[in-house]
Image (cartoon, rainbow, N blue to C red; front, side, top):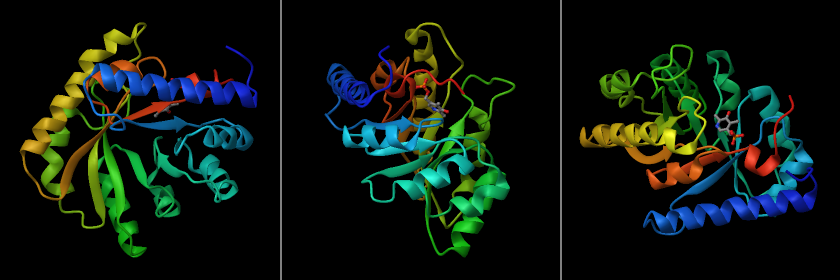
Length: 236
Ligand SMILES: *Cc1c(COP(=O)(O)O)cnc(C)c1O
């Protein structure tokens, strides 16, 4: 890939956005139904700012310590922030109100802490439930069956708006091998939607990264999280 300079970043943002539009078209989905979340971990603020000028509007960060100074530096930028990394209970208080969406709620315990802190702050926090769709022993996330079983309890959280599901499937060499996992997440979202719990929405499916976001769009993604394809390989 070209070295990271303003022009390269602009070109890559435009290219990813074009591929998203084309994948929507191929899948017979209306233009604009899929939103791009740029995964900005380890990326310097000036590079993020360039990408925002090129058309990004949602930024996803993984670590609270890294995210806070970036959010402070980019307060004038017309962007929304999503939290996409593993969130520790003791950090919850410091993120309420900063992120439009916490995509990575991976346990009932974390959901309850978010609800408690959002309540204290007088806010509603939008979240996605992260599902360990490949049932990998070392990966965070709800087990697919657990998430269905826990919906009645999650539904009671009055300061937390559940908007959908997120997943990081097992790493695969070719994008098409991720397809069954994307399909399973979509099926799981349909199952939960069929429970018809008014406070639990299944409008958002966050799945697909640099290697496989076009496949994820074919399988129903509404949010794709893309880092490397925009900012190049991470060296940290
Ligand atoms: C880093 C990251 C991404 C983006 O991965 P790329 O392969 O660089 O596109 C997506 N989701 C999460 C949760 C990440 O941490």
